Structures are given as C-alpha cells and as structure tokens.
Image 1 (cartoon, helix red, strand yellow):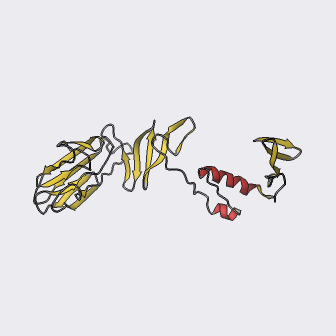
Image 2 (cartoon, helix red, strand yellow; image 1 turned 135 degrees about the vertical axis):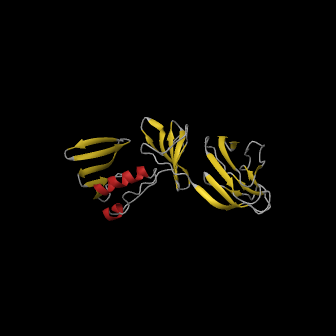
Image 3 (cartoon, one colour; image 1 turned 30 degrees about the vertical axis):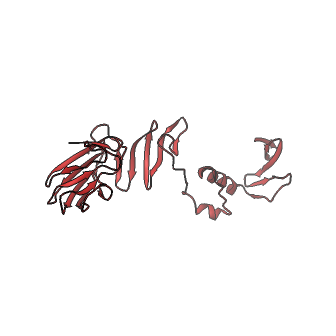
Length: 238
C-alpha cells in the first residue's frame, strides 16, 4: 500500500488502485469496490486501527467516539511464553512480560522466566538468597493447621502450596501430604510436622524427594524438613 498526495487530499493506493482518501483532518473516504462509500469520522477510523493492532489482529469496530472511550485502557494481548513474551521490545523480543499461568504475570529475560507476580505477590527465581533490604521486601507464604490425608498415599495426599507449611493434624502414622509440581530450580518448601504422628511426604506425580520417584519420605512428629528443587519436580532435603 502506498500514499499519494493530490491537492489537499491524501490517497491510499493498493495494487495500483485507490482504496481510500483522507479528505481533511476529520474525514476519510474509503473505496473498496471502485466506488466511494459513505464518509466517516477519521478519528474513529484511526482509533479502530490501533485497537485492531492491540487486539492481535481481531477486528474491533467502534461505532462512535462514545463506544471507543468506554474501552480505553482495555488492551488485550496474547498469553505469550518465556521465549516469546507478549509484551516485549523491538530489538529484544525474548525479554518482557507474559501470562505464565491463570492470574499470573511472568517476567522473562533472554527467553527464561526469572520472576512471577501471582496472588501472593512476587516470586523470584533466586540465584542467591533474596533478603529484605534496599527497597526489597520479601514476604514468605505460610499455611498452618494442615490436616494430612487420612490413610495416606500419593494420589489424594494434601498438596502443599506455600513456602512454609505446618501440619497440625496427623491422625495416624502415614497420613500424607505432597509437594506441588514445579520446574523452578531453587524453589523451597519448609514443612513442620506439629501433629501427633509421623507423616508421609510425597513428591508430585513423577517427582523425587531423594527416595525414588513417587516415593514418600517419613517426617517424624515434631520434626521439620526443608526441600529445595534441583530439577523439574526433583528435590533435595535438608
């Protein structure tokens, strides 16, 4: 498509045919089938074009300025990935923001996820221990009073979601909990058994806590253990 100016009009040309013309700063005339259609407001036309680009190519039509202003600020982007974030930069397309999971914003750098914002706040893929200070506040999630799954086993074990978990009720020896699936190397889970009996701690399906795939590790009553992810769903205990 090319532009050609004639007197006070700017014509849009495509394939050697005139497709439209800007009559003045307020009006645009479109010719799709070799005849001129009705004139419409140029401001609305341009805003529709912008909305079309921001919506990933899905046609968005606003019939009036009122309809457009009601949608200002509602720019919708594709989910994206860590390697191709949906909000990135012209010469650095593998760095930016994307939707890493439901209600979660991922932060990517050089094609790798380095942090996430979820309902609990900021989760950082730590290379070294991150501590509060210098404008950084680290808030660690904790769940207390957890009741381990009665009769045990991996399939129905209570899944732990926070960095710190306190088991409040372990009715019988072998009642179970399990770690969630994660690929975030360095992610840490601290589990304290404040129940009356020993609990079984399982990995997620296919995972390993050091005793073998899908195998539980017994956590004695009153004991605490820390698991750190070393590979996808693989942990080492401390």
